[in-house]
Amino acid sequence: MFNSLLESLPFPPRVPLMGGPTPIQKSRLAWGDDPLYWKRDDLTPYGLGGNKLRKLEFLMAEALSQRADLIITSGASQSNHARLTAVVSAMMKIPSVIIIPGKTPTEWGGNLLLDRLAGAEIIACGEEPLDQAVERISAERRLQGHHPYTIPLGGSNVLGSLGYFLAFFELLKQAEEQGWTPHTLVCSVGSAGTLAGLVAANALLPQPLHLLGVNVVQSTDQLHNRVKKLAAEVLDLLHAPCPLPPFEVTTDFIGPGYGLSTPASSKVLIECLRTDGVLFDPVYTAKGVAAVKHLMHHKNREFPETIVFWHTGGGPAIFDQHYYKELLSYA
Image (cartoon, rainbow, N blue to C red; front, side):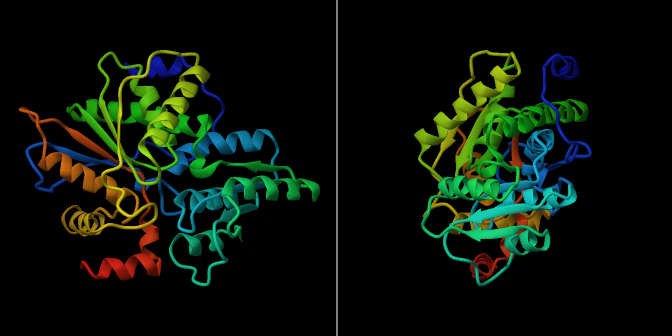
């Protein structure tokens, strides 16, 4: 059913990095009557996994087509996107530069350690906005004779979002083969590309799913508008323009802000690890799982509804001392 649809769409080239579908795991958590599944993109190949590998399939293909000899990207110090960009760049024998805010780190735990082991050059840009620092450093490297390819924050542009357009149909095919139907799909949202790809794909269904994005970084209006813009660009790129179905974005679980855990996220991380053996990170995916728990405890429906939480990875971040010390207080 879905294969013929996907074969009819004009996808740009991509580098095969995924190696096949990621598994789906049924949860044993007793949060209500609704079946709950984890879509395990934390188990993608390479560099301890994560959702950004789907985006990098398209982004790195474009970098190769442009004969880039340097990959430049940016993110927070514990950026999962930066980690996977560094690893994939190293695998392709292309040097990488990762630009982070603030001062040069004195501790190299979690993703920062993996960035360095992958050979990335890490540049701290102080108070300079990340996007301006990326432009400045890209220009400097061009003057030095390089041909840099710049990947946006989180890999979240129209090309990167294509990864989750395809992932949406991967999930539907797996569910169909396993004999169940998803109704609600939840994911944590930061740079918007993952949710945008899912929203764009959902637009092609005769009966769209309920999509909920759990905001971990910015105002709801800004994020909602960015998701809509990216999703529309995905459909335009694929020559499949159509109205976007409704989707929700909530900021109810963001807590004190981006990169900061909450008691709910820390507690649910430990609960999931001890019950399902699934590791989330306290500041991104665990906030999304906290939203799922709340949804299941406070549902206003009269019938069970199958919920899928898209686990986008991030486990290595807990080995940063800032996070693991806080988690130990809840263990």
